[in-house]
Image (cartoon, rainbow, N blue to C red):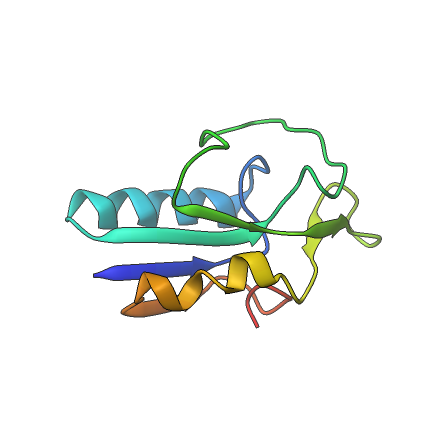
Length: 107
């Protein structure tokens, strides 16, 4: 199956949501599924790359333009419209869409 994870928190940040996504992704891919991750781009928000777990050139990770959060500095907030990232979604023919967040990317 083709599975899409949509999240507002992903690498290089390291927190419970990120660890959960990485664990689920690894387990699903070990079973032969293809997992795509849609997340904010931390570099566009001026966030330092720390705790990098996945290489930035992973072809199954799509990044949305983002800004740094005013309420949680260091956490990027995705801009709600990213035509570059959203244009790729129909082409992936996702069987499952899983939202890991109720904020911008999760919507």
